Length: 168
Length: 441
Image 1 (cartoon, rainbow over the protein chains, first blue to last red):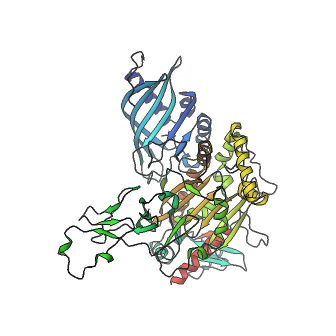
Image 2: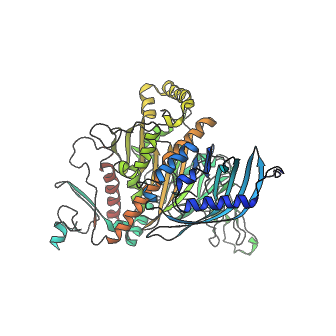
Image 3: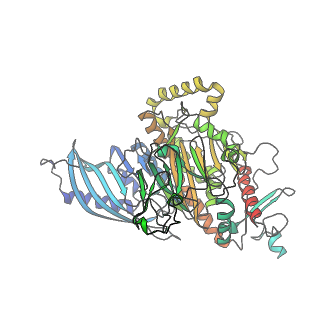
């Protein structure tokens, strides 16, 4: 992202950090309906494939490429006891760091951050998901909202991470 | 001892007792088919599989579309061996063992690319993309009998393809691939017929993930329609919420009545009337209204090219095809090519790709990929629950001594064709597996 930061944008990094930490807390607590409330009405969520981390989901097979319709369905699934991969829900803990506002484009605030997510399940060793976030945030009357959320894993392959069955 | 094997104890498996030491026991008289769970946990069995199956059968290497241009390459593992799958400068597709002839190091470390040579970082030996030796630093120090023309990268013993799907065989004496594939060819044809030119391509983006379960469980799972309703109820809900009719057909577990088929040589498939939408070419509401006309146009092209009957076969039926031992092509919500190899008895490594016609427009390709992710893959609405089921089974196998037998008798004694929700097609795999493993002993 080579865009200059819009001097008129009033958002600060501290605000963005508070927002991301709040989001991480909702996800770690599995408050998924509250998390949906953080999204715009046309939000999207992507996990690119490990071998093509910067690719476009229209031409490349992603791990996850949800528009808002499928994202809402994903939340329905994750709350269902028949979502076997996540029932009982995994215990997760997210560490968010290196938060930066990297630009403003079309009224959307581009944000970069790093993450380390530890996932624990009974009878399984801990699985670690490490990577970077790329957000597009929108300032609304109701506060910041997520218009786009991209979780890009660092690993060369999913390998022992196995499935991406919870929200990264 | 007899009580354990004939009563309600965990040993209750083969109709007549312990199975006489056999691991797969079919009893046609008492209509039982049992697999001893030792096959999922034993290091000895895995070693036997390497020698009797992976060293003897045709195993998938890659698709021609992955190496489109001269000097394109992909490095990957094939049956435990490091392999370079590439197209040489003259255009011939090759599979070379990725190991320097000098002292063994990998000569290709990148996942994919285009290169005029493969180069060993250890002592600098280099190879052309046809495998021939290109150069040796300080070659004047080698003795007079040292023949550089015999020091090229070693090709896999056999490399053959069917409609651009390349397979290797580590047995020089294996029957040719086309004969080996037997009836599976007809089902590959149904997949390839989706393309107006008969050319399919692997789409960029690979899914590589581990399952902590025995590799054979994924063979079973990939073609087992019995589990769909229980394991994938959240996916069915998603389809229903999107306006797709998922009501089971009368007297059946699934929305349509499909079959499980024996294709010969251990290959098998499901063959199901479609209900879940197909990018080629059956519209469902998940695709959106704007896709309707486009899918009708794809359908029209199929009919013009193939005739009504064949077009309907291609566009209105789904197939989960398993080519023995470990290649799965699932042609349903989208097309996935899935290959998997054992790491240890309780651990497999899966590689999965999306496949599509080369002619697809941007909108068609985007729709295909979207449809793929509704069901398949480690972030899909279904595959993670398959993985969960397989890992739970593997955990259960820890008690294989107390509960030694798995039951695969569904549909036995049914003189009609086996349903996809029966286990007749799973038994095809196990018979072939058993035959090869016993031939070795």
